[in-house]
Image (cartoon, rainbow, N blue to C red):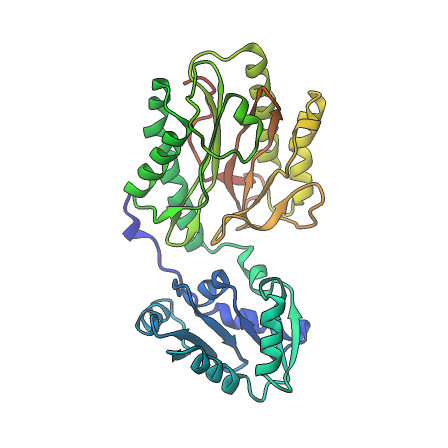
Length: 371
């Protein structure tokens, strides 16, 4: 896979779209402290940065490790900003204080600022009123641009290829931990920068735990194996789950699989522009309920995927979000029977402009139960 051919991300216009939200949020500027949001607005990939979005400029504050990197990455992303490099925390604080001076109402990312940080900012910024804001940047991130979808698609394709390389080895009775390591190695060899989360490999009774950690347990013939994993390509995540059996499973296990497969397809079919996330959840849950297994479906149907593996919107019974073209979400119903095992099937899908087509699955590995 040629990851060098991915289309460039132009982050420059994003700050202006963010500024357009300031009047409704009741702020004159926004201090962006969550690193995924800093990356979204600037293209910066380092581990230390704060971005002040003012009406007339961007002020990017980082430490001495990242001055050159920040300049190069912001230029590549088409972002014009004043870059302040402070080699000490005191210098970084001084740069922020000087840049905030004169701002009447400064927005803070309420869900990303600790109580201790808020107290510090109140001390630093003196008479400036601090205003909690609710996911202003994340609201932009809900709709993926084509270049973002291209990166998620590439990460999904790497996951497909990795599972294709690993699946035949399950017949050799490897441990769950070995399979998790193989998946990570195969994804990295294909260009992924890392896992989007720690892989879940859960065989036999371990499959009854939705987030089981890979163990030293050997995978035995005829039992269900839940494989949930993903990788990162240029900052963007993938997520896929397949449940398989090495050899013929029991009739009860096959029945569980068929129920979840039908539920997952119903959820997939429900994903389209203007559909509510609650309706997608209901489409999956209705089939599992009808099979008498509703009490074993113990989590939401899905979540958004992008710069973070779990981001808005939630696909759940209590969700209030409505899907739009460009939304990228997972559809992952599951059933779990303690002491027996579990089944989960998951795709990452992107909502299309065409409501007749609905959505496109970015994960493509076959959904065949028996290997």
